Length: 342
Image (cartoon, rainbow, N blue to C red; front, side, top):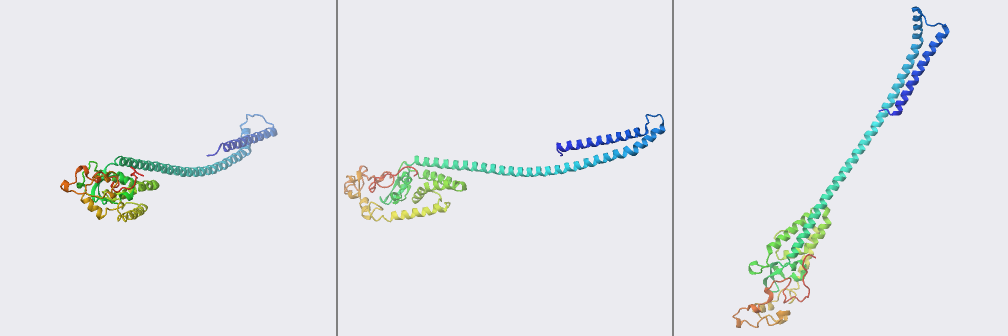
C-alpha cells in the first residue's frame, strides 16, 4: 500500500492543479469583462455568446488541468503499486526467514527434548544398576554350591568371594553339586537372577549411543565378577554373546590370567591339592605342615580306628564350613575379600 508521504504528495499536487485551473478560469472571465465592459444582461443572446466563450476558452483549459491531474494520479498510483510490490517481496522474504528460524527453533527444541528424555532414561538405568549392585552387596553372604579343588570336595562359597574379584583366590573353584551341600545360605537361583537383571540393565545402557562412556565404566566395574561367576556356572544365561568387542577382549585377558593362576596348581598351598594331601584328607590324617591356625591343632586324628572309620563331629575339618574365597588350611594370605563391587 502507498505510504503516507505519497498520499500527501498526491493531495498537494491535486490541490495545486485545482487552484491553477480556478485561477485560470477567473482570469479569463476577468479579461472578458474588462475587454467588453459589460455587466449583467437580461438578453439571452448575450448569455449565449458568453457561454460559448467560456466553453471555448475555460473548458479546454480545465480539461487540460483535469488530464494532468489524472496523469499525475496514475503515475503516483503506479509508484505506490511498485513500492507495495517491493514491500510485499520484502515481507515474503521476512516470512521465509521467519519460517526457517521457526523450523530451526523447532528442530532445536525437539533435539533438546530428545536429549532430556534420553538423559532421563540413562539416569534411570544407571540408578537401577546402582540399586541392583547395592542389593547384590547386601546379599554377599549368600553362598553358591562350589567344588573346591584344594579340598577335593563340594562346599558352599560366599558370594563375597566373587565380588572381591581376587582371581587368584578363586582359581581353584569350580561348579559343584547342590544336593551334596547343606547350607542355609545356599541361594544359587537368587544370585543368578540378580546378576541376570543387572546384565539386562547393562545391555539397555549399551544400546543407547549417548551412554557409551557410562556403559563402559559400569560394564568394566562388573565384568570380572561376571567372568568369575561364569567359571562356577552361577550365571544361568548367555552373557558373552551380547558384549561389545572391548569387553570380549577383556574376557580374553581374564581367561589368560586364570590359566596362569591354575598353572600354579602343582605346588601345595597355591593350587589343587596334591595326591599325597588328598590321600591324607581322605583318611583324616592331614599333616600339620599343611595347616595353620586352629586346624593346625589336634583336630585331625592320626587314624580312624578308634572311631570306627568315622570322623567325629567335634574334630571334623573346618572345610565343611562356608568358604569365602579359599579354604583356611591353604589361605596363607592375610587378605580378606572386600565385599561389594570394586
